Length: 206
Image 1: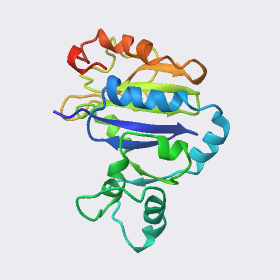
Image 2 (image 1 turned 90 degrees about the horizontal axis):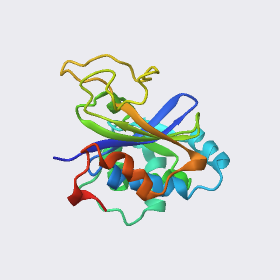
Image 3 (image 1 turned 180 degrees about the vertical axis):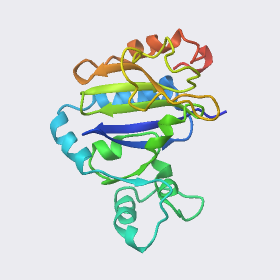
């Protein structure tokens, strides 16, 4: 079973989150995003890029007016391979899933947006949000069967994604950890928090 997730940004109270189909656990996608964020030296120009980044619903059908984002991808990533011609933004950006590098580098000015997926914790198992309002890297966890689970570090705060149970009995994803940009952990320390909970198996650790 694939562990689906999200990666992206929050700035000026607006989420810009991209879907990740599989491999979203902390020892895979989490480490990838941590590595990319640790390489950022100056956050000020980065904030400007994210403010200008345009989120587009991933289900948006590609048409004549989408020539610029299509050309942008072809220019910066000419060797991307597709099984068939992409028909929507999800398919267009799918080969770039699992990394923030194209946005950190300023190569892409459009992002396929799946921000509402974080409210579906039955299927969204992990989310990694670079919060530019608080200058923190946030880790969110799915599979929330109660609104105030002991692993949820926001128990004393309001979950910004709500506390309403969906028709399948799940609550929105919960933030279980956050790290200041100036104190991002090394990979080993990052994984120690998650290894005890049973979310990772010995065979999956790297």
